[in-house]
Image (cartoon, rainbow, N blue to C red):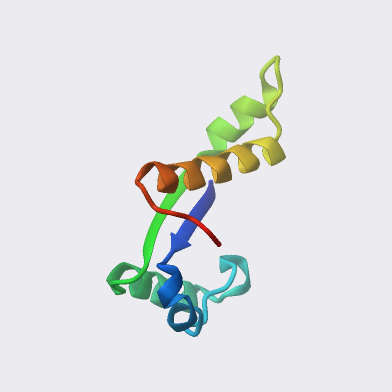
Length: 94
C-alpha cells in the first residue's frame, strides 16, 4: 500500500515540535518511525491523519479506461488530507 500522512501543530508550538526530529518516514529506520508515531499519538500539541491506498485500488485506477496515474493519485490524496484538516476548522497558515 501507499500510505500518506499529515501531522500538524499550532504555529505557536512549531519550534518546540520541530526539535523532536521528525523527517520523511522513508529516511528513518523502522525503530525511529515507531517511536515517532508513539510520540505523535501522545503529544498534546500534535494532531495527525492518514490515508492508505491499497495496491488493488492503485492498480485498478492505473488500468481503467480513463487512467489515473500514481502521481495524480498521490496529489489528490495529499489534497484530501489537507482539505480534511481545513474542514475540521484548523486554520492552516504555514
